[in-house]
Length: 149
Image (cartoon, rainbow, N blue to C red; front, side):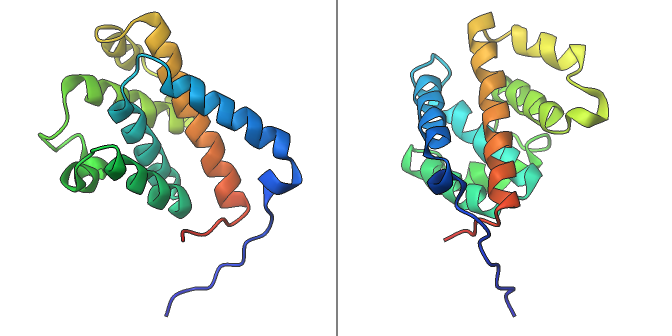
C-alpha cells in the first residue's frame, strides 16, 4: 500500500520573492549556451541522487517535452555503464555527482579538467550553478514533502 505523504509547507506561497528569484535564475540558465539536453539531464540526475520524487517526475516530463528519449532517461541512473551518453554529457554527469555528494571529497581535479576540455569557463559556471540550483530545489521539495503529482 502506498504511503500517504502530507505536504508540510508551500515555501513559495509563504515567500514568493524566492520563487521570483528562482524563476530568474532558471531563465538565465536557459538563455545560456549550455544545451537544454545538458540542463535536463542535470536536473534529473541530481534529483535521482537526492531522491526528490517531485523533481524526478517534473523534470523527466519536462525533458521528454524537450525531445529527450525515454531510453536515455531510463539509463540515466546507470550513465557510467551506458553507451547512450556522449563524452561531454559524461563529464557533466561526473561533476553533477561529485557536487551533489560534495561532502565525500569535493569536485576532483580530474572531473574539473575533463569538464574544461569540453566547455568554456562561462559554460562551466552555468553548469555549476545549474547543479547547485537543482540541489537547492531538491532540498526544499524534500524538506516540505512536496509530492509528485
